[in-house]
Image 1 (cartoon, rainbow, N blue to C red):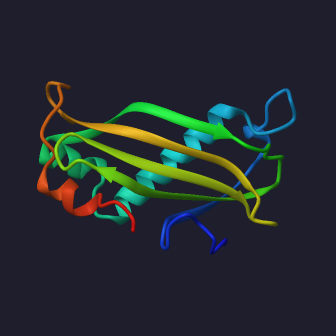
Image 2 (cartoon, rainbow, N blue to C red):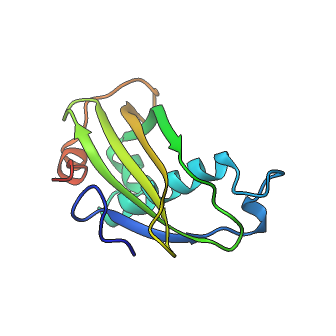
Length: 143
């Protein structure tokens, strides 16, 4: 995996594009990039000790408020992609921002960059909620 990420130690997973990811243009469909990013985000959250079951136990969860994604190059069927994520902001109150970068495993070419802003919500009401200490401790911005 690439060692030239924008931060020193991002969370990284490898994904290989299969036939189900490919659209009529012959490359990975843009919604797959989003799904891959969110899959890696959940894997990272679990690695940090916060699964959906933990959200339910705590009574607070994170939901997407905004995505900003740049698609820089296509991914073709059979290509391996390294997907990295890390936190860039956490206001320790209600919002946090997670960054993503995807690179072709074969040559390290950057394929995708993005950010997702999350807001913490009360799991019962769906209304914004103060960030619990568990989130502040786990979801720290990368250096």
